[in-house]
Length: 275
Length: 323
Picture 1 (cartoon, each protein chain N blue to C red):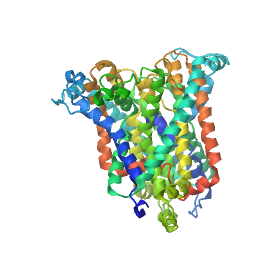
Picture 2 (cartoon, each protein chain N blue to C red):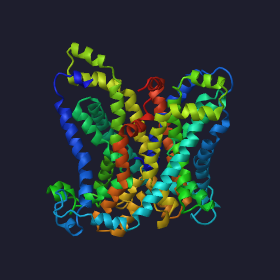
Picture 3 (cartoon, chains in turn brown, orange):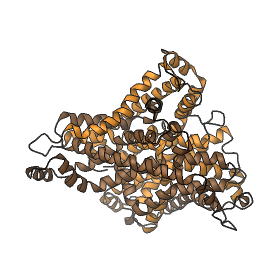
Picture 4 (cartoon, rainbow over the protein chains, first blue to last red):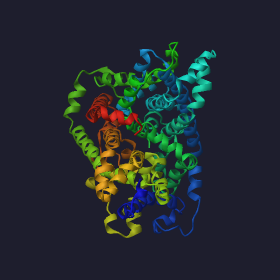
């Protein structure tokens, strides 16, 4: 729409490049500092490339338990997202295809979760997790992460599945296909873009989650990445390059995901709110 | 993003926007399948079970716990309305409620205009704008903890940005001064969330029919006039959606502020969610923390329903047509 414009938008252009600076400068600083020697951190200009770039900070971080925290994050994220996808695809299929009143009720109840700041329920969740003897286990993170992702995931999937033509279901039903077959050979293939989208979106949220790990775990064995950044900050104190190396490493998988699947990631972020 | 709080933010981001539009849509959607009753409720049971166990039951639980004394370890005992009277009289919680309101309004004032301008800007199809847009979204990949830690280092008066650029203004004790700290919190929240909101505005702006602009140009409207008389009115539903998410989302910021300032200096950045955490998990007064949690739930729910209602049925229509 803007291409029709006769004059170039100078004001917009200036704002655009200024904002780029605001966004990129902190990221540039993080990466640059992580490559600095600890000793030169206090002497060199923070925005100029280090005179002697080094990966020492990364080695410090990688030998300080980081691989375990990384592994924990992977376990929690993969397990949560796998379960989220299975149960939400099933529930969405039910909501879209069932003609009973319960389908609409189910949908309304689940959508209620979007209007409530769910983390306000953290105290009862903590109570339940301790009573179930799950405190300080990875399962303690996985279970509530699944539950909290249900509303937005179902919303996105339902919005998408409604566009699958009813005739496809009809013809498969005529062929004698049951629910499971419909789900597996019709819904899943056709809803694939939406499934990829919610998978990325939910993975991002679980990966970056902080409140559950903070409240529901305590030992190093169950530490996940965002919480490890917090503890690294306590352990390394003045070793800022090491802290920022940990920050960089923790964001790396998401950056890779971003480069590979930017379109899906972005459509994932807007999907629940646009259409 | 999203996560805990990001996860929380993500959840609350959905607040308002998706809620009514979709159910509205569902009500109107014809059911195309002729025979049969469709799939069985069993299909929805696992999702419902998870949601009930870790969202609905805790929601009831938090109300009950607000009437109990509990230190987080032993067995909760009945307290009646004691927690309520103590919390409602607590200057700390009053302060937190006030700060939450300030943060809520501050967030909106800062983020709404910037997100709109940036979103409209990157809705253009020029190459350089696509390039800028790709970089604009980078903050989305950092967890709130990572962002907060990075800004802490960046804002260090001696070794941070101020020292690098030799600008005296930047060499302040940003996180140590109560007035400045709240400003820093607002700035870092904006840095984190504007990318997401500009994404919404980008999508909204791309839906505006080009013919509207062409007609306006034929009538000799200036760029300024086109912006105010076409872009803004056409984006009104996006403005409502995005504003709802910003306002309700303000009730959920926890991890960013927790890592950045821990609510300090003093209680200068101790907003309600942080107050809830600190009362519950630092002072081990789960009963009072539950009172704060109930307040958060009620305010959040009221706010998203009120904004949804205020925006009216028209908004649902537009959302259905694919905003």
